[in-house]
Length: 195
Image: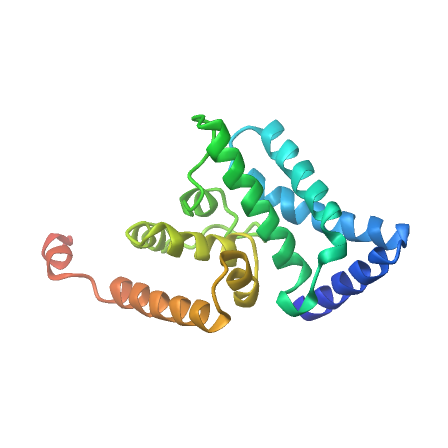
């Protein structure tokens, strides 16, 4: 299903659920559960924690359903914002070693989430991972949300509470820099390359 059609369908289900339509609420819940669980499961190491955090996220979503405002962003971005806040609360409360760093895109790249169709990983992906690791956590989180979780740039902007223009600019600038770095190895790397 196209992203635009999915956004329209989710928004329609929210409007109907806000009016008390139980079937629309069930459809909305069924569509959002795997998205939320996937996001959280990629960021915590314990499956039970991911399940609990998913339940907490969807509970908060349900409590706040009447306050949804389509003008502030799509439904998926809104629920992902809630999931991100639930995760931040969990990390702050837990302070345990079983929680992956919030903005660490490395685990998303390593577990094949960037290759959802099951094809073998592109050999240059390791180079991209290594280059991206040098960027600040917020940049890595942007890439994880976009390419690991499949959010649009507009949805990433909503989740991170930045303008869409700023998100586009950051993606564009980072992608250009990564491409330049990968296409033009430094003189030191060239000197150490096998002949």
